[in-house]
Structures are given as structure tokens and as C-alpha cells.
Length: 251
Image 1 (cartoon, rainbow, N blue to C red):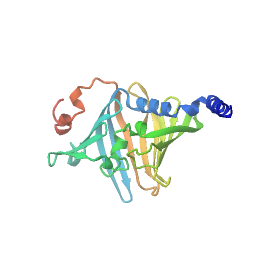
Image 2: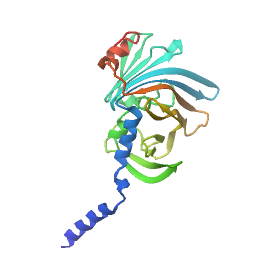
Image 3: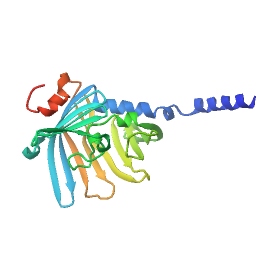
Image 4: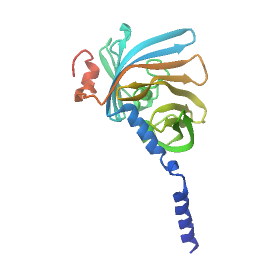
């Protein structure tokens, strides 16, 4: 009898928990899908700030679904044509100067992209956030009149990730406000904040994304969206090795 009472008590505890405490995964997935759409085509300006110097690039990006993306540098001319393709857990980089495609091992997906504070996974808006972490709502806040979910994302056992935890802030209308990255000792390494909400494409979207190094206020990277279209019709070959190796040709 005692065993059955314990089972009933456990069931009642689950039933009495706040509904949103069970919905961390759903909130993250909805935010991720809102951020990418079924497809997207964008042009962004990337500014890399370091003590004593600054570098500015323009990038064009295409995404399809949750795990396919191609992004290519279109300016300055010395970097023009450099590209990165991600399909699932596989990634390739193309350098037009040597006309060579290099496959990136999974261990390098967390490495810096072109010397910026964004990793390959960050720039590709990798679905690793959905598949490799368990998400739990730990608090709620407000952004104006909009509810904001504060979420702790803990890596699943044996997940191929470098972060010990991520902390997210996502509005109830699915807009990411913050993504903070912690090392294995749960010490903050970098934080991404989004600002300047504007109507872009068919939805409200943050035009500015700033990734800040936790240890140096003078080291950060800003992405500024210049254009963004969601759910455009993309040819299958647009996000492919063919398109990566042939940036000047139509897919």
C-alpha cells in the first residue's frame, strides 16, 4: 500500500506543477522556428571589435528547415566568396583563393567563424540547441507588456557540445532576447543580446545581434540585418556543396 501511495503522490506533484515548467522545450523550439522560418534569405553586416582594431564584413545567408544553412562573405573583396555550408551535423568551408572545400570536424563547429565571437554553430543558428540540451523554465520576466521566459539549457548526457550550460531569455511571442554561454565550471564565457526590434520580412525581428566576450568589454561582434525574407522558394541546390563551390553560378 505504501508503494502505491508514493506513486500517487508523485503523479499529483507532476499535475500540480505550473504548466510552463513543463514547456521549456516547446518555448525553445517555437523561438528557434520563428527565428529561421521554413526558409530564410538574409544579408547581414558583421562588425568584429577588438582592442585597437575593427573589421567589417557583409554576409549573405540562406537557411532551410532547422539544420540546413549556407552563408557566404560578399564584402570586402579580399574575403569575397568564402563560404560555409551546414547540413545536419556536417559542415564544410570553401576558400575561393585555393578553390578548395574543407570538411569541418564536429569538434570545430564550436570554433570562431572568421575570427568573430560567433561560432560556426552560432552563425548557422544550429539546431544543436534543440537536440543536444534539456530546457527548463526557471523564471519569468517582462519586456514591456510581453512575458519573457528565462530558461536554463543543460546538455544531455554524451551530447557533443562544449558548453556546460546555456541560459536563454525568450519572449512569449518567440523572440530571442538573450543567449548566454557557460563553460563546464558554469562560468560565463560570452553573451548574445538582441536589440532594435523591427518588422523584417513578415514578422517582428531583432535587427541587431551582439555577442559579447565575458572577460573583455572591448571584444565583441555585432550582426546587423540589412535585409531578411522568410519562407522564400529556394531551389534544392541553393544549399548544397554545388552552390558552396560555385558562388557565381545560379543553382
